[in-house]
Amino acid sequence: MKKFYLFLIVSIMFFGAVSCSKSDDTVIFKQEDIIGHWSHVSSKIYDPNRKYLGEGPAEDKYGCGTAFWIIDKNEMTAGQYTGRDNKGKCIEEKETSKYSFSGNRLSSVDSKGNAEYFDVLQATSSSFVFISKLPEPLYINGLVVQYVEIHFKKMK
Image (tube, rainbow, N blue to C red; front, top):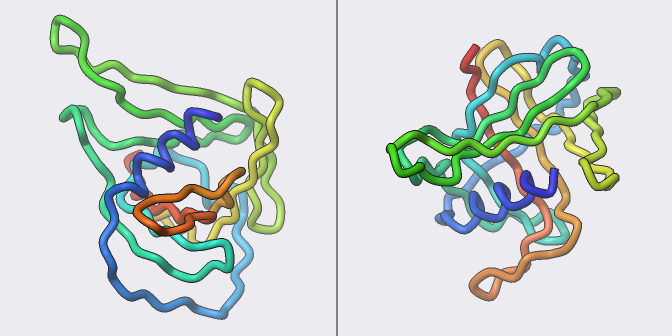
């Protein structure tokens, strides 16, 4: 899922300052709530203390669609489009891994054996939102980014 973190990095580079509010209500989601084909809509970024820094829309850089996740009962696939070939066909890059889901935490191990954790904040019939701590902080335009919140809409 190292490519997933590249997707996060790209998604957070296109943010603007917009205020947001958080709810203190804790909802426990079921695995069935996250199963589906999800398309990236927007991202929010936070500093190491989870202070909100900004947000931005998902990018469709090649006219192929935004990044996506496909989650079934046993595996999750993170995908993105990385360009077009010489015939104009979209080039898709995907990585699939096994995952577990417990107490609103989706956990997986990437192809190199690195553990990854995604805390689900929302899961409805049409939207899916999680937050993840980056393995290392990113320094962008004088900001220190440690957490990324990703918003998806359901495609299938």
